[in-house]
Image 1: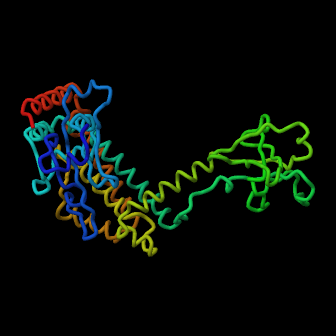
Image 2: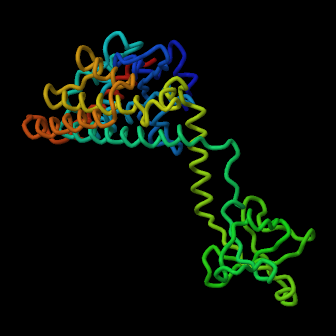
Image 3: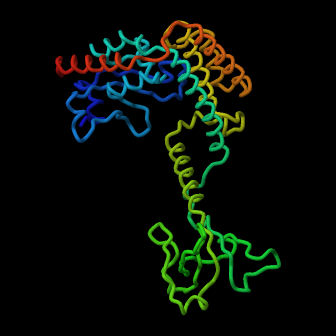
Amino acid sequence: MITFEQLRTERAPFLLFECLAGSRAYGTSTAASDEDIRGVFAVPAASYIDLIRPPDQIGDDRGNVVYYSLRRVIELLTQANPNILELLFMPADCVRKSSPEMEALISHRHLFVSRQCADTHAGYAMSQIRKAKGQNKWVNNPRPAAPPVKEDYCHIVPWHAGHRSDGPPARPVALKEIGWALDEYHAARLEHGHDTYRLYHYGKGARGVFRGGMLVCESIPKNDESTHFAGLLLYSEQAWKQALLEHQNYWAWRKERNDARWQQQERGELDFDAKNMMHTVRLLLSGRSIMESAKPIVRFSGADLSLLMSIRAGQRTFDEIMTIAEGLLSDCERLKAECSLPDTCDPAQATALLHQLTNDWERRGP
């Protein structure tokens, strides 16, 4: 099995291609930019009939360094994936290592340029807009370090008179408000009641409602039904799971983010992620270029570069950027209708190329 460490060695026999990618390839890097590495590796054809399938992708924890198998690269190219297509058009000063097989793939890159590229570039661009607004919520609403606990998603309908009020009957009260300690109770499922349980108070002798990370229902002795019954527990497990997932996503983002990228938002100068919006326009400019000249733009220059950098620097409003994006989308649709590109890549030709390149690499040997 190929490992990340093997691919990072100077003479990795599996490595077909390695390049600087991201902002350093686009010409949009700043002093705070990370270094992104992308690469392609080969595996013997026979390994695909092993019970343990070879990896499609190998990378570091932060996603700054990612290598794709040759098979996965060609598969994604047939789907007009913008991030993979640009590997076939990398500026020479970004290429760290290449191989005869990669050069042969590049010489056939026209196979993967189709009208579908306009749609995928637009689709990726729209996803960047969603990120630009969504991550702003994380900036302005930081999460506490402690994950959400199940008790925060519990409400009680108390039974005994001491907890009744003059308000509407059977009104649920938040667990934190009523102050009950669920480790002094047992729970039993309420028939025909979703996420609702009967609660029985056993004090210090109780085993608790939550044990081992889950709610545990007990069989309550008949004699205890009337003497220990305390009320109903409403536990919104799905809401807790969703909150936990959002908490994990937030802290994964906090751990991996480049702090310099978010300073304008944290200072309140922007209400969106400028870098994501820059990528929106970058993708649309590149998609338009494919429809015009049958090749994407990787390295930007001139007016296009100035536009991207002004967006990155927060010098354009969200509405301004959206107007630019809508104009580029319109251009892509018009050019797609007029161009002579095929609708999609021919999968048979792509498969034949994969076989040829794999066979050439195996014959060449390490």
